[in-house]
Amino acid sequence: MSQSKFSVEKFGKYLLIEQAASGGMAVIYKAAAKMSDASIQTFAIKRILPQYSTDQEFISLLHDEAKLMVRLNHPNIVSMVEFGKHNEQFYIAMEYIDGITLKDLITKVASHHEPFTIDMASHIIREIAIGLSYAHRRKDENGKSLAIVHRDVSPANILLSFQGDVKVADFGISKAQSQSHKTQVGIIRGKIGYMSPEQTRSDIDIDHRSDLYSLGIIFYEMLTGLRPFASNTIPEAIKLVREGKLVKPSEVRQDIPKNLEAIMLKILAHDREERYQHAQDIVDDLNEFLVQHAPLGRPVRISHVDLMGFIQRFYKKEMAKASSVGI
Image (cartoon, helix red, strand yellow):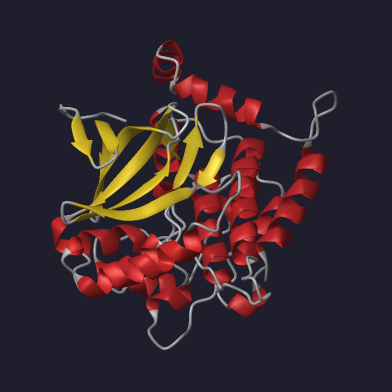
């Protein structure tokens, strides 16, 4: 990921080291802070843009969601450390991941004109599903479901560390953003292609099964190289999502096994009652598929080491740089 020129900046207890990315809602920085034991820890700081910081409804929603998100502590989820304010600027401090987004990797793989392997795509989707399963099942102290739904499961919100970890980012942020009247048209357009059919309607409550559909779109894109509902206009994109017409993955890529295609199509069922009802069910079926699909002499499960090697094929220089500076 390319960084623009940036001067180190003190921001509350954090030292902003470099700008890592920018989006429609915030600018993300790599930052450092001294901990109580005098150690230095690295964080990602998401500094909310002024137009959102002055939107009281948005900030209130984001604060409420942040209270839930700090409860999420799982290897497949980017941890939220705190939601705070400094000099009239709101920010979110998160676990820092040295790596790339799945969106970056999909783009890089496509530029090399070689598809994701069946096993590697299945492994990444399984890891995302493990994180979603944990979040969807979280309960409060009284045993009541927290009803956590991500609402924006897309390649840009999946982080892949250079060590081969897969982590879901931005839980809770999408709900606040989607309900803000300041949300930009460009942001909406970029997300529609990964929305579930029910997300495009205002008369249907969204539940965790919407996240599963979005996961299916990512899976489809990784294995076929196609985004089935991509469009240049918002109305057309919404129309395509609502219709939900899909070319079978095996018609695009003939080496996709039938049992894997069945899993993909069940995740992508237009009627949410016909989809997988829980992310853990996807995990279980992908585990079974990977065992059946494993070649003789190879471990039945792909691990983070395999993913690290796959990423290295496309990001060798970036990984070498990260290793040399001891991140």
